[in-house]
View 1 (cartoon, rainbow, N blue to C red):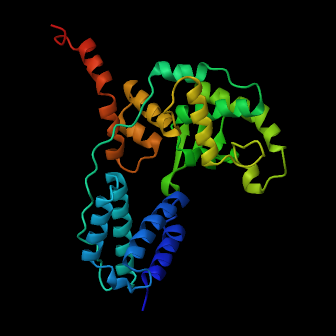
View 2 (spheres, helix red, strand yellow):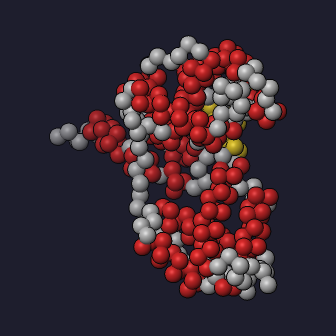
View 3 (cartoon, rainbow, N blue to C red):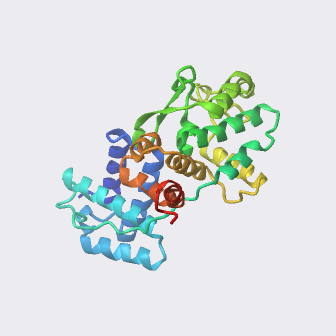
Length: 302
C-alpha cells in the first residue's frame, strides 16, 4: 500500500529532478499538499484522496477565508499531484481530473508613476560599497523587470555588460536574455568595478557565493529577504511606504507599455509563460491609452 505521504515525497522529487521546478515553487506545492493530505490522513492510502474528499477540503479552505489566489494555487497543486499519482500507478485513477480551477478576480498590480521613480533614484545613496550595491540593485529591478529570486540568483557569468545583456533564469529555470542599458547599466558597472570586491573580501566565501553578483555585508550571496529589506527601506525614505520589489517589476512593464512596447515583447522580457499573464498591463495602462486617444484622434476633442 502506497501512502499519501510517500506519494507526496515522490511527487516533490519528480518536480525537483525531472521538471526542474524552482525551489520556491516546490516549497509552495509542498506546503499546500502537506496541508491537504494531513486533513485526509497522511498515512492513508492514495485512493483515499477522492474527488469528494478534495471538494470538502477546498470548501473548508474557503470557509476559513482563504484568498481566491491562494485557493487557486491549492487547486493547481492538487491537480498536479493527483495527475502524477494516476500516471505513475500510485493511485487507481485521477481524483482531480474534473476539478475546475476557481476564477480569480483580475488584480491590478501596484505601479509607480514616473515622478515616483525619479524620486526613488534621485535620493542620496550612501557613499559605501553597500550603498553602491543598493543603487545597482534598485536600478536593475526597475531597469530589467527582474523578480526577487532572479536578481538574488544572478551570477557574474550571466552578465554581458559589453553586449548590454544579462541572462536570467526565471520560474521553472526558464532562461531569457534581458537588455540592460542606461542608468541600470551604469550603476551595475560601477558596483562591479568599485564595490563588489570590497564586499567579497569581507570573509572567505563558498564558490557559489563567490560567483554571485549581489553580496551582503558578510560577502555572501544576497538573499531574497535582503533584497526585500533594501527596497522597502529606500522606498520609505521617499514616502513610498508600500514599495516592494514586485512594484518595480510591475512599473517596468507598465512604463514599457505606456512607451509603446507591444505585449509580446513585454511577455518575453518578463519571462511570462502565457500572454494572458502579461495582458493585465493593458488594464493598468488604460488611463495612458485614453490620454493617447484624446491627443491623437481627430474627432476625440470635438
